Image (cartoon, rainbow, N blue to C red; front, side, top):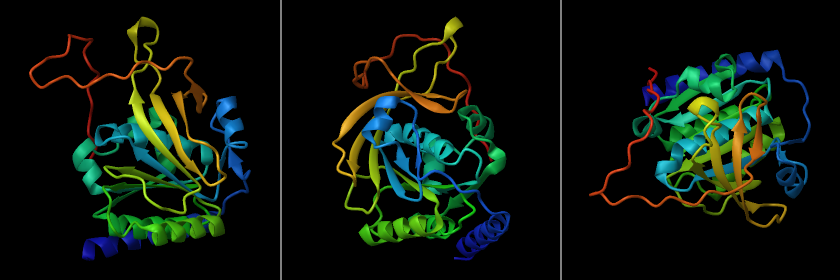
Length: 265
């Protein structure tokens, strides 16, 4: 309990300092990039609203995180971003790495990272951050399907976002969608990148499915790439076939050596 109080107290202090700095007004919607996607969404996604991002399966949790961070970059190009992450996700996928965040297009200098002990602490911190009008985006990552994250909780987050003008992106791994007050709900699956010249890694790629939109927009899949240089999504021209998992007694053909990963902290 002491650690949770200390975390929330530190967050409140940071939010108070941000509020004194103020935040310029912004358009009520933000573009995702692809013209067809923006048109289907009626001009883009709404700011000052709650949006949900679900990983298709736990193995696609990092892809859901990357998609959520990209949405945060689009929704708040220069405003502070509060990223609230349940510690369970650090144990499963590793801690956030500053150079990787910068490579995605988000300046770590305007990122406030909160590591929450459990879902209750993460939800409380998310609600506090969503009420701060100086914040541009709150990204909340929660593991599993805790009972505390119910329809009532989503309504409270939606109301806080609407009152403060903050965009909230709730990212869920290891959970199935349920009733909520979110403006939109997405499912994300990681895709193989198209190799760049010289065999260098290509752009981060996602298969994104719109599951639900409060405006009644029908579900649809979009294969997309994240253009980190121009900070926008690009629609993939073709959807590669899905790859089935190999049985445990088989091996994968040799590939180019993977780039080393480093864990921060």
